[in-house]
Image (cartoon, rainbow, N blue to C red; front, top):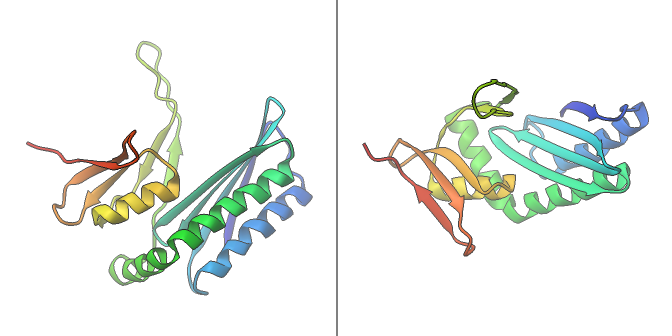
Length: 180
């Protein structure tokens, strides 16, 4: 597993880095040996709260978890529990998806974050770029749930168009399809 650990408003000590990498590394047991996993670990202190965010890139699949507590080590433990819960919940679908992806597209998805600011217009404070690959609507909903987001942009495998799935207030999901 490849790790990228960064700290915000704190110095990442070797002990803290080692603990985070060891705990996140345990996620590997849920995947096959040859599965490529990249982990981005963000450790932050904000107003006395210790925030840990972990994003895992697993051959095209993205898993994300965040935890806040009064102790950095407790936050690390908490985020690992969340990630393990996600993997266990979706284990069958994740494994079948990874097998299909390896057969179809090869190696996975990379995310890139940029920050841009302009003076006279509303500020874009975060830009995400990612490869969009075809997937069924059900898989897009699963990916959205795994990321714990309210919406997900994807290429619909059936229509070959960019679509958006989103979580509705009533707990169901919506699908946005373009018309020209």
